[in-house]
Image 1 (spheres, rainbow, N blue to C red):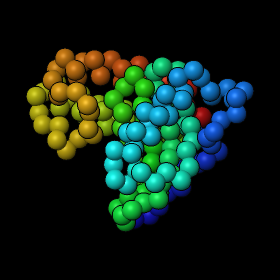
Image 2: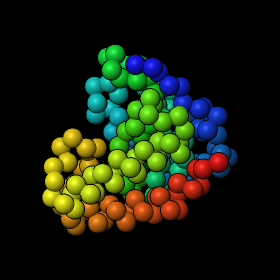
Image 3: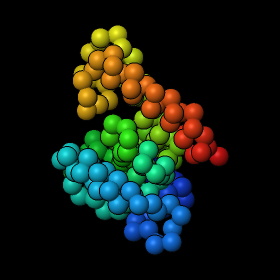
Length: 157
């Protein structure tokens, strides 16, 4: 596996300075959520470094973690997305920037939405912490549309 190193010029290393414009009142809670999420996986317990890729306060937070992989199939870099959306991780091998991480997240979640709308199995898709039914698919679809139209353009260069 070819290891991709994310573009660290696009992220801020933790801890952030008190006057950092990326800091917000919910950031500490979001970081804790991201740590808990990644810590659920056996490979996510040994975090070496933490970075903030982007935050839209109360909506979405994109974190980048450098981990000590315990297995050869685990990349050294993991993006974690949390907020008012289902939490998920994107392997660093699949995204070099916060934009690519969020774009990949949206695409993977859109696959889940389509399967849930059609009553198909979501077993091999990105895990979402709600039942795969049309009502949940529509709620997630509206959030994804907002991320795609309003948030993703903020990360484009």
